[in-house]
Length: 78
Length: 140
Image (cartoon, rainbow over all chains, first blue to last red):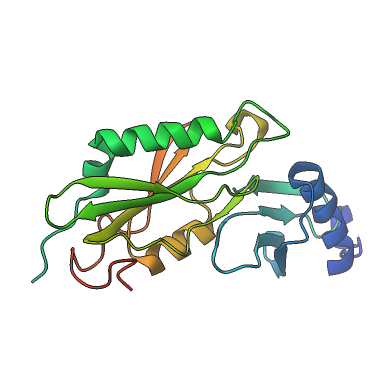
């Protein structure tokens, strides 16, 4: 049995903290972006996108390991 | 049936559009890590002459720009828009259109030419939806 089978799953708050730390490092202020978070089979998906529906632009998209918090993939959209 | 509007490929061969894309790219200050920002504007087709005219929008921010309000030009319709993605690919930024770009460009109904350090991407329809008829701004 793998170690991760017994590891507690990270909460959405913990995952958001991980994503936000990376997002602010790359984007600076992200307060104009809205965030969606959902647990999928491959991990937590955290997507940032412009809150203003008229604004063309982008934000970071992450897939984060639900047990150890590793960022498995990321895309920095603009 | 409305006359057909120029396609994205045709716009990309137009000298005015080429110059506008390069001007916007340079004005984006892609080499300046502190000041780089998005630039863009709209591409118009003059119905009487077929001439292409470009109007620049107000500068955007580091990774966003608002192109939702093209000014009306007498006798012209909007056949495209353009903007830049000035953040460098080799620092991890994605040069391609974002989900929001695709969403807005498909909604607005004109091709969007996006200049990046990897060349030009096209987002939205291949040409103005519905041809050259309809409203002078975006067709929808």
